Length: 421
Image 1 (tube, rainbow, N blue to C red):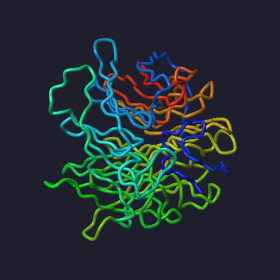
Image 2: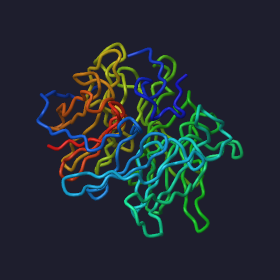
Image 3: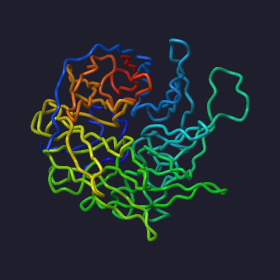
């Protein structure tokens, strides 16, 4: 059985998730030689913490992220340099093992998910414990007199499936806001079938109220849900599950793209796509959307290229007559023991896609790539192959308005990097 709970942020030697892989329609893609890029390490964690998710950009001069079991950080650009500031260090009770990307509120404060910590009914896992929680960080109301000024943390919801049957636990980040200030996210475990949930947190004068809006059944509609949700223009939530549903992929299912539509009687689920070995399997990072409502994502393995399991894919779902049309934009050619693209893609103002592979690349340590849409034909460019200057990124990059890329790599001591055109 696939085990996803409390595994994000573990070493890539354990392949991020405990996958049992027994297996192995494409849009036309062309491969061009690597283009000249400037790769720079802008922070090295020196082995103390390892960044297990990408960074969130704010106003082109601030990057937010999390690392290791305890740390939420900010990097601020000062002149030509990036300065690193820890924002908060969890103590286990107020959170442990932050997961997924940081989400920024309209006031510049920080929201995120902690896979562990909080209410302890879920038991301990090694040195960790708790069911996980959603947290809020904001600057202290007192004037800071030192260079190291921690923000104030408030757990706005602590998951509790023991006392609240059907509640999820082990949230995995990727929080999004709607226009009313509600927060949507996913939990990797819990729910009525212990396959994970989608939840909403609604603000009120007395705090936040959590509601489970969908609970997954692994063998029917997939599970666990992973990564970033998309809220479309009609108020529907669209996301992915890592596995489940399709009978292939070693009997574990290959994962799905799902849609949740709000109705007067609750949220109704529709399966938009079921993955299969030949078109990719195991979606980890979730989805992004462009202005036309097209959805883009990645699969860790599968596709028509690579070793017995396939090297992974980048895919697109395009809205068509009230449904979506699926196509593979690129098949990766990784070796049998190398995983392909992982985490979120990034989209620039010209419609180019950027991503990262966890292994692959010229040295098998991961890579950063670009897909350029040229009249419906997607041209693949290799932007950087990791050589030990960071290794094995566990999430994709973030792009700024000038086309600069920012991301993290878990291995090689753990780094935050920048690529400039």
